[in-house]
Image (tube, rainbow, N blue to C red):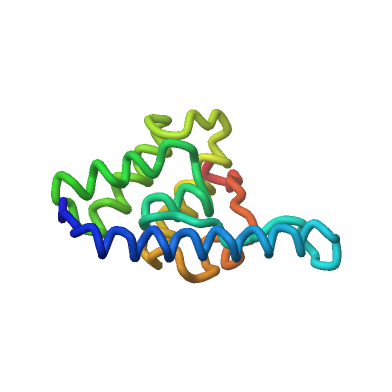
Length: 135
């Protein structure tokens, strides 16, 4: 981990304080009910892992992503591992297969797009698992 000198650390604390202030203004404005949503839709997160968990979940995915990054996996390997872990119920504890598949796909997309585009949220409307003639 990189150590910051006190001046740089104070700089980042100052930025975070300003962001928090802006979010409080936005939350107050949203609470008036003039916007379609009553909450600020862009969650704060300190890293990609936090962004993915806050955007699409499931709970616990941020820690899993951070651990995979620590052991040196690249982004594609992380996507496949995260998707597999969600599907295998190792992360998220989601019972419904359809919901696990949907969350896994959304989490994978969020990781691949760095959590900054709308694809994981709006690019996929719904995931359905259906049977065809072969079962």
